[in-house]
Image (cartoon, rainbow, N blue to C red):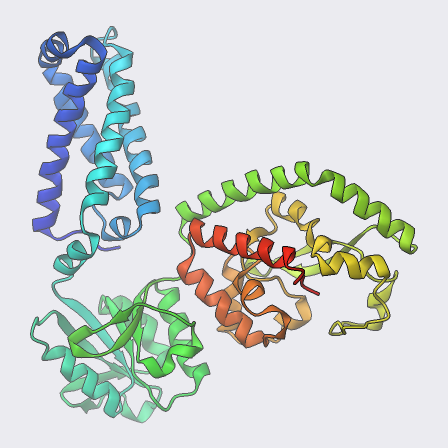
Amino acid sequence: MKLLNRKNWWQILVADILLLVLSFFLSFALCFGAGAGMQRAFGNYRVALIAALILLLSYNYFGLYIIETLRDKIRLLFTSIKACAGGTLLVIAYIFSFGDPSFPRLVMLYLFAINLLLVFSFRAYIDARLLVKSADECRRVLIVGAGNAGARIATQMRDSVDNRYEIVGLIDDNEAKSGSVVSGFEVLGTRRDMREIIRGKRVDRVVIAMPSAHRATISEFILICDEMMTEYSIVPSFYEIITQQAPMDDTANLLLMSFFENRIRREQKVVKRAFDIVASSAGLVLLSPLFLASAIAVRLSSSGPAIFTQDRVGRGGKLFKMYKFRTMVQNAEKIGPVLTETNDPRITRVGKFLRHFSIDELPQLVNVLKDEMSLVGPRPEVPSIVANYERWQRRVLDVQPGVSGLAQVSGRDDLSINQKLRYDMYYMRNHCLSLDLKIIFRTVKKVLEREGVN
């Protein structure tokens, strides 16, 4: 995590103090009226000073002076709520322990609400990208690849006009290059040394410049960057191994594609989980007549249970039972896992109807409620497929699998495993509630258009 530089930190600190003073006076004014409120506020100036100090310490503790917080508005909102709530509770504790127990409680409620509104609005108004640019006046950069491309990029970044980059060195998988000097830059080691170099050299950014490397090799370097939570850039020719879209960066007049750590943040997980609980609960209640009708139809169409369960791999590689309405004859899976054919004789008539409208997937709302799945996410695979994943492909296991996903609404079942994973990687890097809603609406649209998944 990177703190704002000293100039920006003091500017925001002064603004926070002014906003706290404003919040204090407004709280008394709303509670007692303008005239009487101002008078009582001045009479409690000692409390105001203590409250300001406590709240500022709370801001710092919860991370309101950290660049990463300013980059993400959802994270900023949750952090602001925690910082203001925590600080207000401490102020209340101080007042009733060491101050005047008769201090109006309603003032503290107003103080929390007004302070939260002002703190969040002020930081949301700030151009976070401008703060990041000024805060990162000198970025420590590690170049991956000691060939011609790596040497050229290192030289160009070092000689850039704004002089914002310090090249700490290069690494290369060719051990013979370790310890040598390439265009004035030392080759610090190989892939095995990368974690230690990032940690020891306090690397802010990794630039991957290996035009002839195999995609698996590039993926290994990217995995290390993700593990170390380090920003990285790759040249456009490596673009397709990660995703289909990424922010373009003209660093030092070099056309690079830059990535930040791809895991969904804790605040986003809270929002996503809350949405899943509400939506899945509502879906189970509203669709209960359809559930009952489907279960009866399945039982009448062939012998066997109405619900079919299958082992799938969830977040962190954990196995869970995924629920579906049974669409095949009983014990159809005993012949082994096969790709579903258009006229698969194992599928019952009712099963064809359920699959055609994706009704067979509805029991997975129970998986969502049990926190085994999410409404939107990478599609969970069977263990036999996951067992053959390459290391970079296993990154999809970092997030909760979904009932629907970007791959499902974009390409249907004609996508290869690698193509589906590319969509999943894109989703992981660009996740937000609005994207989830778009995917859900597109899923409903496809179902209504009778494009159900087989």
